[in-house]
Length: 196
Length: 145
Image (cartoon, rainbow over all chains, first blue to last red; front, side):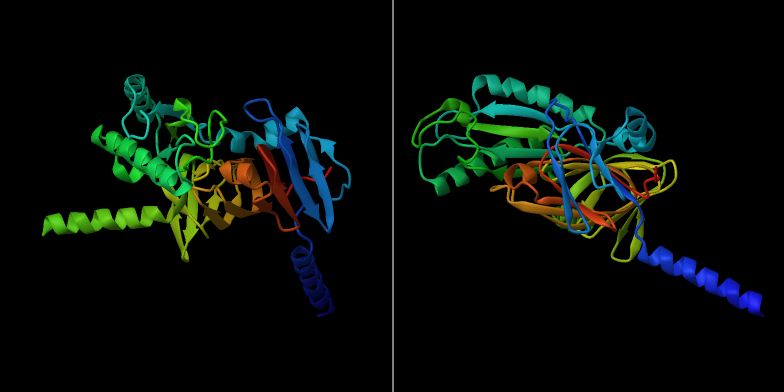
């Protein structure tokens, strides 16, 4: 009887300790595809640790960052890294001033883009319109969306399912070539397409 | 009549697509999405919504691309909850919170973080990580050394 009680208490203690002690964790920063290394901030028990060098890592029970080994990346993280989706492919199409008409060259770029769409297993497409810095902000928001919708219509007419495409307008917020307000810069009158 | 049914189905598909915050792009083995108390079998092309929980089986993995071009992928025996996702495609303002309950996660930040550093967070049972940019790894249940 006593042995059963002791056994039950041990089981209870194990269950309780499991509930109160969170599992160990590990955070690390990797170099990005373009070679640049960003940063993350990890907060645990009120302590903040900045990781801003490639392979810098912090794990439970350690107060200082250490380096994640190649071997650990390969063994622990290889399946997750292999499952990373293909990077979005970017295409740029350009427009005649104050219109939603594509330039001659950009009509050719549409074909390359359609090839990329058919190459991907589960494609979705973001169409993002931009304007130059001529005109009012609200007018540019409207025009940028109109350009994006125009390209979306072109893709649909080429057989891309409409529910796979999202159109949005960024107005003049993301000028490719920085200019003063009011400057008619053709390289800023564009639609960016992300095939994902 | 058949035409009406097709129209309704298309409208429903578009309405449900409108709530998607991401899409499953790669998948290996057995992966489930817990949504509204149900367990759905995941497949490439399937939409991911706020409050979804992604669960991978042994020898399984899944990769998701989100609206702002951020990407997350899970290794085997992993559980990830999409706690909050908001993104304004005009201003790029937004917030992305997720929780890794167990397993391994790889991530690449996107436009939300470009606009607002640290607006992407990954929680574990003991810690929280704010992303200022680019690529990272997280493991829960990491072997001690």
